[in-house]
Amino acid sequence: MIMDAIARGAAYAALHPGFAKAFAFLREKDLAALPDGRYELDGDRVYVLVMTVDGRGKADAKFEAHRRYIDIQAVVSGDEVMGWSPIAACREPLPFDAAKDVGFYSDTPASWVIVPVGSFAVFFPEDVHAPLAGSGKVKKAVVKIAV
Image (cartoon, rainbow, N blue to C red; front, side):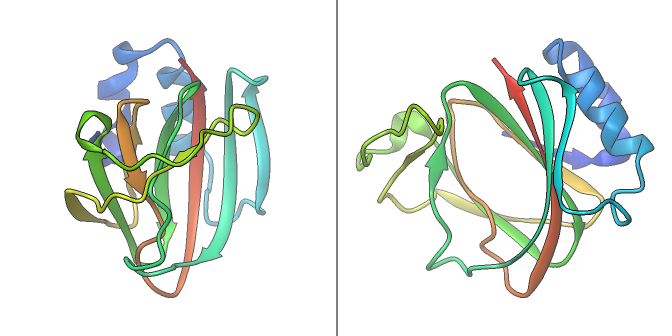
């Protein structure tokens, strides 16, 4: 997991070929004005899901991991809290849905972090994460990058 300000995203471009496009989109677009929906940057290899959703609180946040995609979750507005654990520490997986590239876990996150507006968190396939653990409306842009 990585957390930083969107303005510093270019510092991570060398980590993966799709990161440069992802962080350019997050820096250059007026994310607050973008309607909810899917924005393709490189077909299914790099795309962005803009969403406005209600926070679920820590007790109801879904603890999830992906195998085919890295998530860059950028907070546009609202109070976002995310849980995290390394996948190696999780012992209670539920069946993985390969078609949706998501597996859920009954484990409890090892840590919780507040992700402020204008910041992002990167979750690799080795990171189990629980987004939307805050409260109230949250607008975010989730970049999906094929590994």
